[in-house]
Length: 176
Image (cartoon, rainbow, N blue to C red; front, side, top):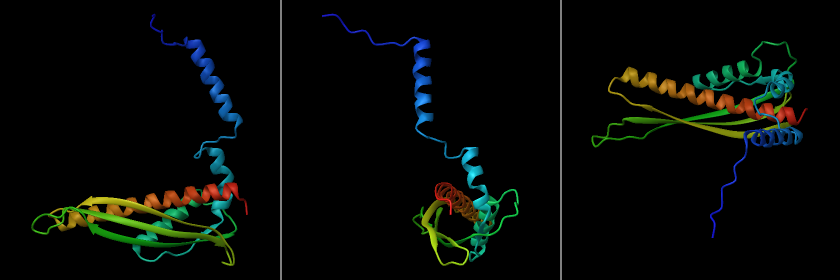
């Protein structure tokens, strides 16, 4: 009994198959999530979002990040939507030594948000997102505080990016 030879494609055949695959993808309406066209279609609607105040210092960081992300060019836009965000931050100690000293901390940031009409009469979109970041707790209290602050800023950046992505997709697919 003769052994079967593996099927090998010539380079030109491989290019043909790859081109066929690319054409089939473009025909199905597939579009990259972060394409310029997707962002440009949603940009005027994102600029029309008024971010409501968020409590605490870390909430203000999230508020500023969202405002900058929704309207990075500072376009003049009539406000049509209101974004309400409730941010919850919890810190827990992870690595605990025998003497009860923590060596690792974790920040659990959760944001529940809703997009409403500006008069708050109709909720258009509601969701929740979460970010977990960690940091080292060092012997130097100042260094530990800086590490914790950096972890909080990373969590805010993650949450801001996620909210912007979700609202971009929602407004692109559901022009209101």
